[in-house]
Length: 102
Image (cartoon, rainbow, N blue to C red):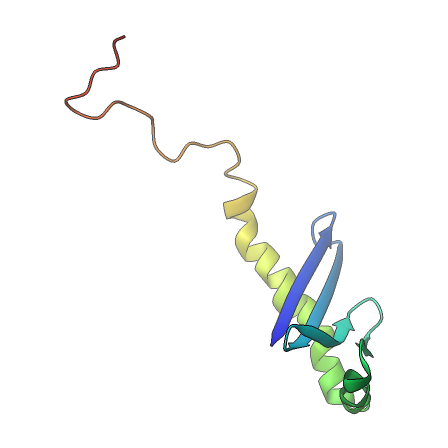
């Protein structure tokens, strides 16, 4: 299972992507965009990290995901998350046939 996490600092000025490879609830290897490489978290993940780090095309794809995944999703979701803060979706009013009087 892959689990991707984008961390934003000051909008998209500073973006960090962490992709975790998990098997049987154990994180075997992860990619950290700050490091730029896959890092093994277990002995089982060592071999996989070596394979992925030796493939320049795969590494370039992972590094590009900061833009294609994180920054893209930030731009798409920002209007819905930040600009709607405090807005009410619907006015609260009593249902027909009910009374609000004490």
